[in-house]
Length: 289
Image (cartoon, rainbow, N blue to C red; front, side, top):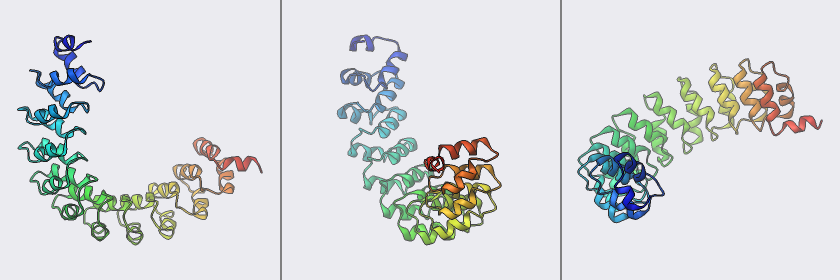
């Protein structure tokens, strides 16, 4: 379709063309002025929209058009800064999620009155350390949860988040790749099984803690320990004998499980465990014996 055919087609066609990544720039420019707000919404989200047109769409009377412009990875930093001050919270939320939003704007959005906006800032990988530190103290537990999972969170703040009264905050701290080993050791002893489960999954959890997690009363925790690439061979050998078939299956899939344990798993009563053992790269060593 040429530009004129597109512009003279019905609104459903124009909407589809507006969000197509292969739509020519000339057609996108015209669709950005369409009388149908949904066409403009799709056009505002198209990453190939010319910058000068995105600037205009960011001022559109329809909040959803502005929201999509705030989400667009091609929207310039200065426009995102303005959208971060928008009267509509959904527009600010999209600006808070955009990885291209300037640090100064994210710092202001971290103080937003809307908790959903603050939640988005808390998980943005470019949110500055000072703002993350404040978000870690937020009264909204979901903001703290997202903050606890942010890999850029300062270590001293992660230490505090690991003691949070909300189990989900502690769980996210246990998952965070930046959480220090000594903190993971404490989280591995948490009263909540979901926190221990995340500690068992974290490849930075110390061997001593993984050894204890492999004996946990919760089979999900033991399964994650069996999956962990840092779990030592002797612990994997024990997990390969676990009463729960899902734990044995994870041990069968772990490339660090010793050949002797895989040999036993290949005879397991559960067919999925046997298949996983057979698919383990080390299993060829079993055949070569």
